[in-house]
Image (cartoon, one colour):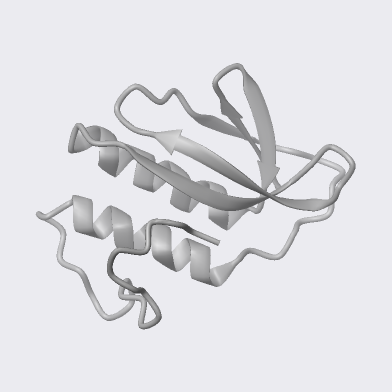
Length: 112
């Protein structure tokens, strides 16, 4: 489990989700672009929720592992979507079959 620090606050999320989110934020920063994403998170009472984040070049994000909490299962669709978006922002990196998401719908800006 990771605690993602964002705008003076923090949220909890699965390790893989946090890694994909940081990678996408990095890609957006390199491209001087921004995006709003919705990612699964865990509130302070341990309940599943969704967090919507504006990420871009000015985002100052960092994660720290959280000990003593059970890892929540990562959402493979959200992770794949973040990876696909990062690949699209980085034109110098080829998009491989592994990073393509067959269920991706053009124009759908919301992550679930």
